[in-house]
Length: 188
Image (cartoon, rainbow, N blue to C red; front, top):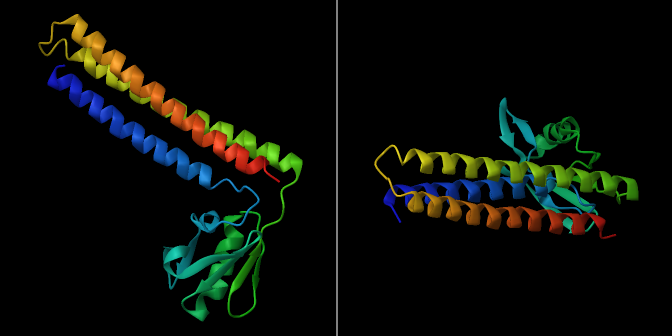
């Protein structure tokens, strides 16, 4: 196989890997009814005037399946952390006891579970679209290689077939991630 086509395949694979990683991160943010420290990953706290990720100013633990505990390294940050959690609007009410902040994760209703499954399907579809766009870009670059001196149509068809194999494999990975998340959400 031509070096130009090999490079396009490598690039497509690297981009698809990133798409899977991004999709997985988006799915992790969807709350499945169990307390998980990753639920607070997107929260940014005003740390003396500097927006700082919560994980950089304290620890987040799960003493049980329904509770998150945020322990700041500086007690003075309790109010700022509490405010950031409220502003993040993640559906959890922080309880500040002067030492730590507790967040009780309510059990999910059947209706809420179905809404979350819809959200999982939307995120998975976004992931599939990104992967298909990467396929399209790779195929266009492979076709352009004809203008750069590769006259062998079989070589180009082979490259496109390889891109399709990659695409199919990564779409299966997205579907698998979504399936696991759905199972997690629907497990009572």
